[in-house]
Image 1 (cartoon, rainbow, N blue to C red):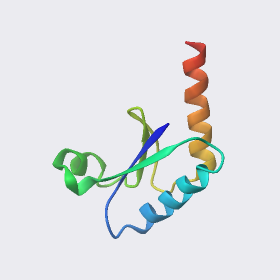
Image 2: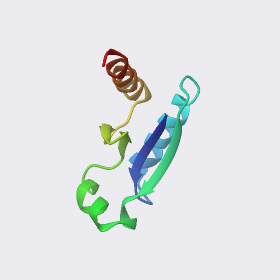
Image 3: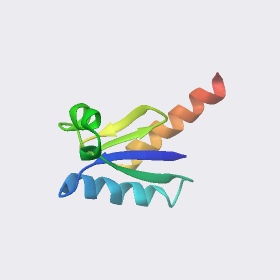
Image 4: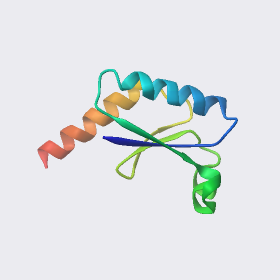
Length: 85
């Protein structure tokens, strides 16, 4: 599973979010891609007040204060939806 985290440099919440996602790697098979919102004007406009933002397959899983247990639950819910469909 590829999780994208929309972030920017010098963002303490982004650093914390990345640490939480790294902990999640211990129990789930995930990859993390860090995307700097300043690399794209559209991303900057969309996420500048929300960062960090964690996204999976186009769905925002969480933003702001990120906790690994919350993200794990959202991923498991998403996986369950896929199985039911």
